[in-house]
Structure formats: C-alpha cells, structure tokens
Length: 173
Length: 283
Image (tube, chains in turn red, orange):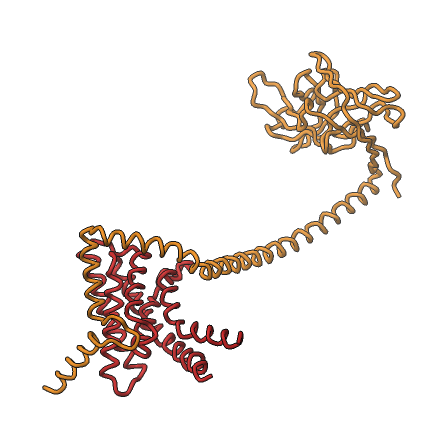
C-alpha cells in the first residue's frame, strides 16, 4: 500500500516537474550572477515554456504560465502583467508552430524559437524603454537572446530525454 | 494562395482560441488579462496594487525556500574557490619554506664556521647560566635607578651578573643578599658599560643619566655615529657577552647629546633574567 502511494507520489512529481521547474526558475531568477560572467546570461523560462507548449502543452497550463509571469514581474521589478504577456505570446508562437508542423524537427523548432524570442525581446525592449521609461542595455539583450537560442538545443535534448526515460517509463509501469 | 492563407488563419485562430486538455482559459483571454493588468497597473489602479502586494508577499517568502539550492551551489562554488586559493597559497608557502630551509642551513654553517674561527684565534666561547627572578621593588628616586629582585646568594647570584629583559640587557647586579639582590639599571648615573655602536663598529662607553635614556661618552669617533645606529655590548672587560642589544641612537636633540634610547622600558619590568657568562673550554 505504502509502495503504491510512493509510486503515485513520484508519478505526480514527474508529471508536475516542468511546472515546478518553471516556478523555481521564475522565483530563483537563474542568471548565473554568482559566476561573475560579464557576457553570459540566458532565459531558462523561455526555453521551458516554448518546449513544453510545443511538445506537451498539457504539462504547463496557460493559467500557470500567466501566474508565473506575474511572479516574474514581481521578482525582476518590471510592470506587472508584462512578463505574462511575453510568456503567452511565446505560447501562441509554440501553439501555432505545433498546428502547422507535420513533420517535427529540432532545427525548425530552433529557428522558429529564435524568431519568436527576437520578436518578444524586441517587444519587451520597446515597451520597457519607450512606454515604461526603463533603462536597458541593448547589448545585454542581444547576449541573452544568443545564449537562450544556443541553450535551446541542449535543453530540448535534455527535456526529450527526461520525458522519454522518466515520465513515459513511469506511466507505463 | 487562397488555401495557404486559410491554413495560416486557421492555425493562428486555433493557437489563440483552442483550449487544450486541462486548460481553463484560452490564450487569447489570458493575453487580454495581461494587457488589462499592464494598463491598470500603469494607472496605479487600487486592485492591481493589492494583487501586486499579495504576489510580492508570496514571492518573497517562497523565493527564500526556492533559493536554498542555488545558495548551496553558490556557497559550494565559493568554498571550492577558497580551497583553490588555499592550495595555491600552500604551494607558494612550500616553495618559500624550501628557500628558508636552505638559508637556515647556510646560517648553521656560518655559526659553526664562526666557532671554528674563534678557536683558531683563541677567542673564548660563551656559556651562560640563566636564573629567572621577580622584580620586588623598583627604586625610582631621582638619583638612583635600581631594582630589587627576589633571588640572592642562595640561588647563586653573584656580583656583576648581567640582568636581561628578554633579549635586551637592562643592568647588572651590584648588591647580593641571601634572598634578594639589587640591580643597577643602565639608566642610573653610576652605570657605565663598554659598548659597540653598529654600523661602523665604534667602541665607546654608555653612561646612565638618571633619566630614561643613556648617553655615549668617551669616544674618539663621534662623527661615525649615525642616528638610528644600534648599541650592543662590546664584551670588553669580560663583564658581559659581546653583541647583546641595548638601544638605538637618537641624535635628534638640540643640545648635541649622543642620546641612547633603550629597547627595554625599565619602568615596566616584572620578571628579569640574571645571566652569568662564562668562558667555555675550547675543545
């Protein structure tokens, strides 16, 4: 009986892992600041949201993404609702790609991801700079986009591995 | 063209409006909420402010828990960095120690060579017996600078024995009783000891002044005495061993006095060493 309960608990944890990861990344603001690397930053939340909206849209609910965006705004101090909007646009892009794709490939996903983050970062930059009068470094944004794009390859494979070896195998059992 | 445009519209509409499994709201409605939040937030709308305060409370409390692993990672990173630094420092210290060990060997060799050379020139090697004594009283009359110590003839204290404060000489025994002795300090007016002033090796006599400093007297080479020169016992007269540090020259005074500032503070003596220097047999 206890074993069965434990199995169920692990199954729930594994199913909710993307959501937990999303909230942890939003609350923790993974920026690797402690490494004191000047030209290095990437947005883990973008990768996570895009991947799961594209591949397993049921793992991350849109409502949770919306709430995560609100949390992110509080953590980084941007106007409330802006990150939610950005995250949801990312979801729209992923959903659109899912609808038009017949034969999925990582390369196509990556190119589409790059286009999407370019658009959403431009939108973020323009709205923060010209509507909300925030001071932003354009160069830092570019660095962030480049590394987010490059890390998509790595994390996409990692999430594939996680989904196929942990979540699926646990479901089969 | 027509069908592809239709596909685009259908795909986009589906992306915006279609609710997936377990989705309560469509993307379009949530985007709409976000925009409302943004607009009302920029106008400082009360409800939005309350929502923001509520979220802030939740976020700050939960981020403390969530950041535990990251903090652990940070601390581990700092620990590894410190460890690495320590390792490098250790390597540096090791190499310095090797150099110092080599220097020590050289020093040992110099001492042995010095002893051998002394034997050749038939000089004597000094052997010392030390008795630790407590200062019982400290006579600070204007004319007499002396101290009474709690060791006397019972402890084999003899007249003329040198009295030291650590490595510095402070005076000599001038009166021996059975259980106590009187020590005449170097600052006493009656104290006169042979000294050598280094550098330039100027031999002279150090006289007490009755104050807290001494003066250099009876020297023919006053011009060779520089400010900050160090005064050592010369060993002449076989009273003290040669080379015991006494004080430093201070020539910064108006009355052209060859003033010596003692290394030891005679007013702060609590324990002293009574030392007898004996000539050891050359073997």
